[in-house]
Length: 535
Image 1 (cartoon, rainbow, N blue to C red):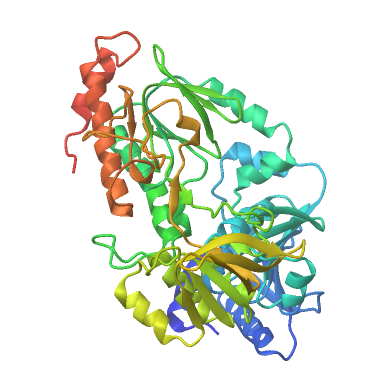
Image 2: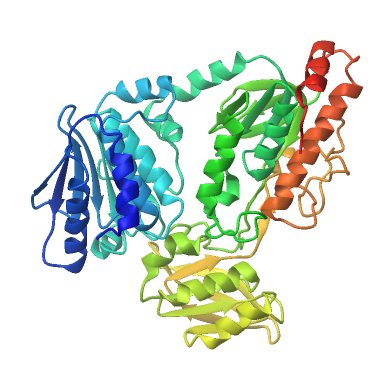
């Protein structure tokens, strides 16, 4: 099953096992079952601490990873390859006693959760967000034997997908009831299970000392800004809903200079690891609510916590733009999707539409065409905006139709899932219906600035207006990345603007060191002496 190179890597990982691990495989004569059984046999052969047995279960093929000492149980229903291979490796290591990389207080909170929680996580193996959720729940299951998790490959268990009307991944069920759809972290899961968790966290944040630089956002711009600030010896904090932002959902990255090719989740992991090399206070799973100016800046969070800082650096990024038509929100996750790589496999053999004729839209159409029966691309303008090479590729595929001057007016459904859409031909003003099972929206990004509407100056598109140093209309408040009025939205440009804004904040602190409430003389002297070599 595994080639020699992967076997060698896995063998190295399995040297970290500290206690026995049992593999329980449910397999039949199908090809996927035999592949899974072969995978389990390969794993067994690499470590004397791994044992294998076969036993029929409700889902076949499946493989459970059990710790006989504490009774923990982690299951993969399907073949955990692709993006989920890392989930499998981590499940083996954590079940075998390898330390779990969570804060001690979080581990203790998981261990002490009352009750039993049985999770079922539906994924597609091409989904980049799914492993994050699978690994979060698997870690919890490894810590607390009253928690179990089953990863279910939706493409392999289509009957379950249809019965539960699952049209977006990752979708999580708990104790047989819907629990979450989309990315969710360990802390967010705990917040849902432990009703007092949010209040306790807010109290901890309220007790933090004031920062010199407080970065709002954990994407490439925010990470770059935090590193540059920390290198100056400034007391630096990062508040983020989730680390990585949009990059975490990016499949292939081939234009990041000096790195010929990588993937979003890998780049995000490297960014976070680099930030953690410095003395940066990372406060994730927190969303900003408001920003107030005074002797110092006060950032209020949705949790109720309030943080203060001498400067603020806004790097909240952007999110997928929505169509804002009737039916879109009603069928979001039930046929309306925004990530073709994540949700595309759930529409195998069905008819879908892609809204948008830019690069992202045509790339989505090309990817989907290899999975679904037919793709209809609807573009608002009279011509496509995608690169010529992408247009040629799309036009060469026999199951892609492109309709220009098409304005989507409504998402149609039967109350449970999408059944079609209505669009208006802008050249004739005629209305048309298209029958389909899924709609993938690819019409660009919208900046995350709703909470800043009455705070800093914004462009008509909602982007934060910044000057050459990244400073906003409020002295001491800086911004960087896709949330600003930068001409181009690229990872490398976001990182550069993060560094610029951070250096701008440092310059601001120096120049205002004599003003009450800004930088102290000690802070400035420490900063001036700390960064001996800065790229």
